[in-house]
Image (cartoon, rainbow, N blue to C red; front, top):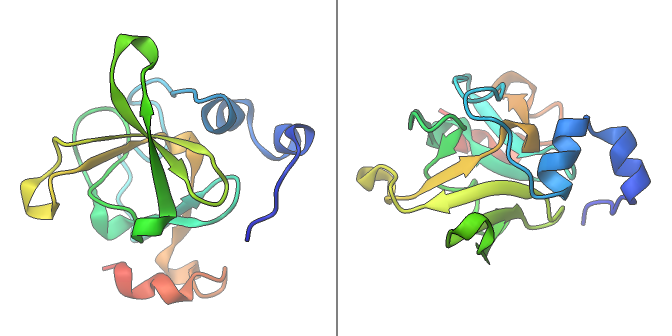
Length: 146
């Protein structure tokens, strides 16, 4: 189980944008996130808890302005909840352990990969390069990175 942080600890640990996105259900501006047009091999973890969320092998270019993934690294990595904000009906995606707001999931992804598009804020993610995964404790996920 990951460490639970107080609001004050999180404000010290995270940048203002990371805090806004993960703790206040915010959204970064499209095409501004560091991982939108980034395709190195590795995994993406929750910036708050460090829990593994997505593999680079499941990342694709959607043109929506945010990193897009066809599936989480494991089904239990994320939880989904109905989001009725902004006059829309959407499905919010949150990290399971850290309960960080990550983004939303839509059913307009590549059909050959299951048809889902996990549209995720870069500010909610930390990238672990493939060659650092063992060293940083994520070696068990190497088989998911091509």
